[in-house]
Picture 1 (cartoon, rainbow, N blue to C red):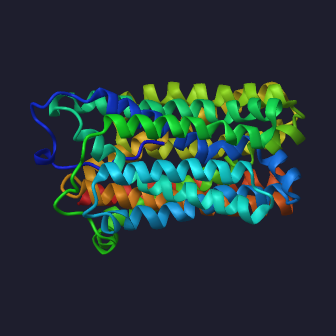
Picture 2 (picture 1 turned 90 degrees about the vertical axis):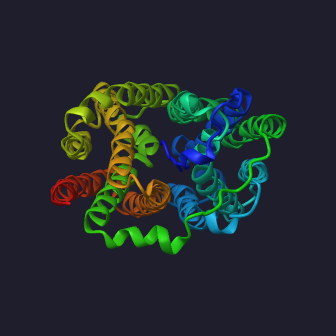
Length: 399
């Protein structure tokens, strides 16, 4: 998922040489971070079996990382306001490596949750600082290219994290899969240390009160609510895709990896295509997406035993769900052109909070009612998101 923290034009170098090595180093960090955040999605079953907990409890590892990301995204500006941004990014990268090692070596469920909490801190901190940092590494005319490269790490990890985690889990176990992320984090750490220049803190950072104050504007409050409900509905179901694949169509480990790879590949296609639809109608597009996802979730109930049908339906899910954040970030840029930094921080916090709530809600439902209750509830929440988005669109038109 793309998260931004814009900076003002005066903060960006105008004629200084581009530091592409630093941009690439941050891209590697972004790849490792997104892979770390969502790796449990494809490994819930072996994690649960090894730690002696239910799959729903194992899924709480995603919920707790989201909760800590929320707190960090709202406070990182005030906590690190005067610190050199290079030092902050290096510290966050170290914490990411520690998190991966803790999860991989966790002797019990509590240590597993501690490792997941640490990755949440990194998620909130890195995505609240990384885009703004990238904008200061290249001349203004090259900023779009720098951001495209940085977001490439995000997109690549979104495609590979689930299928690669499933494949590695079948080869070296879930612990080995998490350990594989530690050397990637180490490479990102050394590369950033060598390539990032000293980055003085911006003169003014948005504080939590200023970020939350945006919700006093009715169109913004409605839009943020709609975005949050969308991500809640999405992750109510998607967090538990692997146990669904294993128990309903009875897919083996290689097939699970193939299906998850197809979901990720479809997501890349969706991200590439959504721009032309947003140009034709922003709110129309982000209303249709959750409505279609609700239809997919409901279709999985009667068609779940058919592996071919599940393959097609989950591919459609990936196409739509991965593209949706592009639409919501476009809305932030248009709705808050003068408060984009605060708006970006607020969006990150809401998205992470709702990912956490969705994982928790979905886990409780999966343990109590299986995939039927989970997917049906996800469809209901997604339909609510479509309605809220339509209401937010009308409020935005009225100003």
